Length: 238
Image (tube, rainbow, N blue to C red; front, side):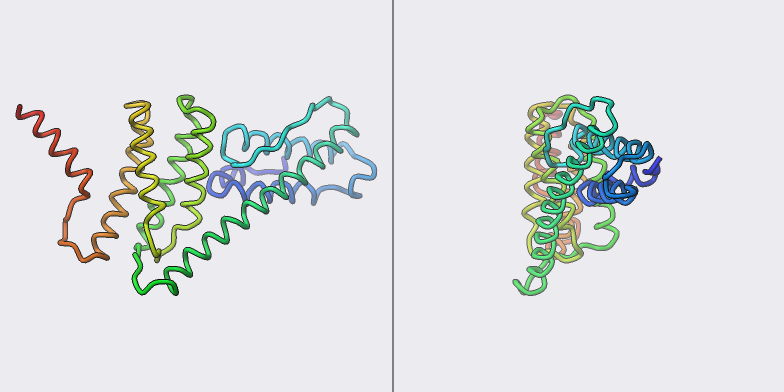
């Protein structure tokens, strides 16, 4: 097997860059550039094709490329897979470039574009990244969401994850995710609780960072969370 279990597991964290690596690793195993296909090359290309298909079908990879009919003929399949992997790599490079651009701009904006920025602790950054990975796993595994809705959420997570830095100029992307949590909970109720709970934890981290930066009194509660608690207590007292 070309791809180890550790490598496959790592694809969850950065599926776009991981898919590029999948394609390049497969290409690196080709003996003479596809002039005459060998059984070993057929096995490598088939493994790469299967892995890319699963990344797309499980919504980890936020791009769409039409698959082809795998016929079991070495010459035909190898040629088709080789072309397919080239297209995948090109699209992933373009997507990765956009993510890098947004990441750089977010970082530089915090340093240059404004005299004020929000600053996360290293522990907060690591926890947010872990929570985003867990949310991605939950969204990928669920059968409740429509495909388009699932894709929108996964793209938002991917862009948010690329822009999580120690210093950020604004928290708009985070609060946009909070809005998504409300929509998800409104549509799916308790079925969405694992996702909503993780987004809620991100919201609490972001709020602590914002409250500290804005010099609010220590222990100030996130208003929307406080209101929900108050409403619950009011209902119990009625």
